[in-house]
Length: 311
Image (cartoon, rainbow, N blue to C red; front, side):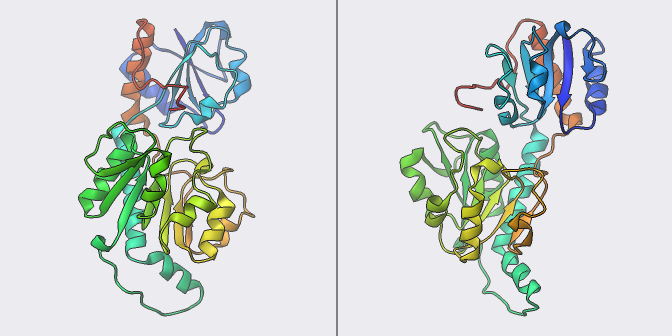
């Protein structure tokens, strides 16, 4: 079983290769610089790969994402339809995402988005203090990651509710809503909204003029999920009209975010460069190696993706 490491954005896979070989020296790990016979490749370790490369792999059976998201793979039509795809669910990444969401929630809770605006105007003004019980934090998307983040926010003392597309019970005991019919009722309560949805056709542009208008006046958006969830012009309009007080954004429709994008000049929008939950090869290599062993033994990998759902 030959394994090819593919990415258009990772400079190299040195750390991954070192860790995986430490776990199992028999892994045949190859890079695009020295791939050998492409007909030998049955497995790919990938992050935002070039779709054209998959056309050169006639015997591909399994693709392992190096991250939690797999939309970068769903967007590769040349991956064989019968190929298995798996993602990473790593405790370190869950903790990073919880930290990011908590940072954003604390920022909104302490009115920092307003003070950022005032600073650009050299304006000295104190806002009325808020209390945690005055605020409701809504987590949009209660999968394994969203439920973990929701529990972390609740443990800090925030009033937390959630929404998920299906009616199945999440890995959390917080109150939750489900389905498109209950989305408006959920949004109307969210003083702080954390988007942690997978990107599917159902969730693309889910945060738009109509849904953002349902949020309470002064609500704050945190989006570390995918840029495709947000209609960026609608969000900018909602912020500039003062309906929303600001946003913490880690992901965007186009990445890197173009220098001319108006988000850069909006002081109540804080921008981070897709770093909310970065894969740690040290902690994630063990489960990737386990999947390689399972595939080699003819078994199904862990964290298998259902392409019909898109996650």
